[in-house]
Length: 198
Image (tube, rainbow, N blue to C red; front, side, top):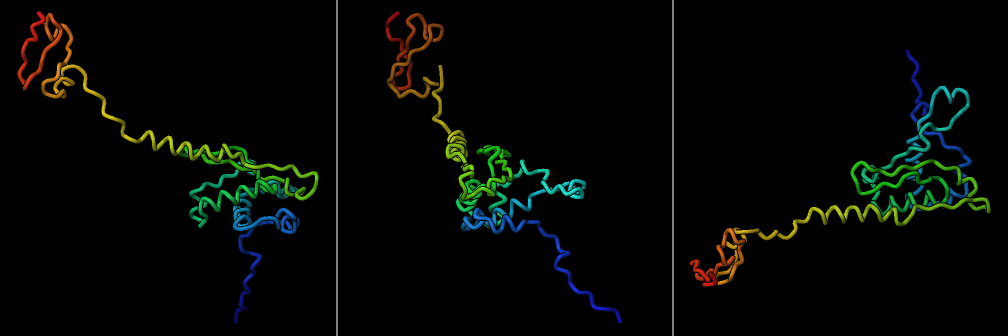
């Protein structure tokens, strides 16, 4: 009779997080969905196996982390909740903004994992925040794109086509080679008569 295999919970894929981070003042300062968003960023880390064997646990992509708003929406975060969470992670020192994304397609924000959180709550802490004008850049880009897609007023037709659009009885100026010596014609009731200026 074969022995029953016991499930080993430690054999499941997981994520390495230090107790120092979980017990830090910065982590306890997080609110709302910010801790969940932080865990999402930590799951994005990539490690070099050869470096890990030699005791180097620094992620190779620590300065190039992406978290798009589309991905946040899939995870159930509203744009307001996600933006507030990222702002708080930057404020307490878990993230740094490397490059602010904009309204252009494929232009996503780039983040970096920061160690500033270790000094949070001390005089040595270096504060940081996401520039407010940079956050407004996306909204301005979207508004500009919408304005560009709006159909503009129809341009007036030049020459004889413009004359055909004129109201009956109105005098329409024409170039000399089209209107004769006098350079004008009178349009009355749909009939063209000379104005007598020749």
